[in-house]
Length: 87
Image (cartoon, rainbow, N blue to C red):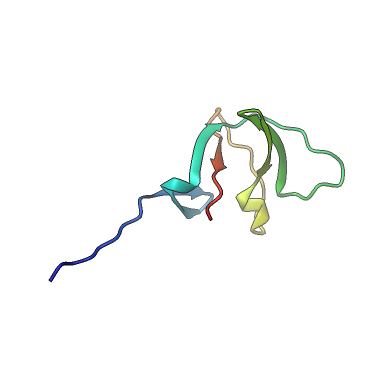
């Protein structure tokens, strides 16, 4: 009998006291964090926008979106994960 096993390559993303599990296929690129400006009356989880490959993408804080607090990483360690759509 032939065994049929399937696997999905994933990566664990450290998020302030938690781990976020993402499939590799969902990650388009990891880029350095750059301070971005937000407009007035924006939600706390909307950090700003970043230009990526000719597109203006919203930068969202996973922590702030999950009732946490947005913390700017120190010592240039912050990263932005650009996600692919899956569907």
